[in-house]
Amino acid sequence: MSASAPTIAPKASSADIPWNPKVRQHKQPVDWVVDILIAAILIAVVFITIYPLWFIVIASFSNAGLVSQGEVTLLPKGINFSGYVKVMQEPRIWIGYRNTILYSVVGTLVNMIVTLPVGFAMSRAEFKPRRIILFLFTFTMFFSGGLIPGYLLFKDLGILNTMWVFILPGAVSVYNVIIVRSFFESSIPEELHDAAQIDGLGYFRYFMKIVLPLSSAIIGVIALYYFVGHWNDYFTGLIYIRDQNKQPLQVILQNILLANQITTSGGGSSNGQSMIERQQLADSIKYGIIIVSTLPLLVIYPFLQKYFTKGVMIGAVKG
Image (cartoon, rainbow, N blue to C red; front, top):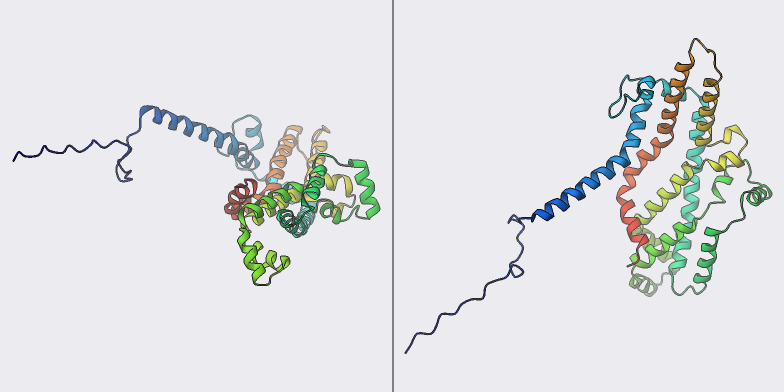
């Protein structure tokens, strides 16, 4: 009996070989070039984004003469805190901080109390008028009465020259309502509502006990949006507030900067200072004002950053 011919196993292709992370994968030269280009572009974007802020920081406590001569680029030179000292000596700064913190905190609370329930209502399919209401909301994003009708309205409501002019007119943002609605539609399973109905929960208790605890990401993001908006609100205080003790920080800082520029451009000497020295002090004050006004936001943002990326992606993309 003749021996059977040996069986030749088919040659395994590269697609059939399982990927092993312990085995070094060799990249083609083209892959290395692409990786280097992507890394270079990302580094350039990061540098372009961060360097202006870094320059303002180092210029705020560097010698103003060296800054004006272009000798301060990456590291501070001639450490000098005269700009900060001048800014902090103004008693109006602390009044502005008090007002802005009050307006921002109370305004953000009111915004969240209004925005979250509205977004939840707009996300419910059984709420039949939601499309009409959302259309009316969206209409206000493109058309408004204008500055003069708004001023007359606030005057008739009696909120001119009060803290409520910062809070009530912007109690809800249509853009944020749309983000919250998309988050509730895409991230809160409908099965949770069915289970809640079986347990006897109404819409209000379902929203408070189930929806809100599962929405920490979008709550953090929307709260940050509102807080930053209130903190940077300059126009409202400029137009609708006349009492100096109710002015927000941004308006007070602008007044300090303008007053210092007027003094600098007046010529002559003041307290033995030459015009060049006063111009350098004005530049230091300018950089110091930027840091004073943005520092609280820079301190708050790292604590909300983990919610920021997740909340924006989930709330903005329905999937």
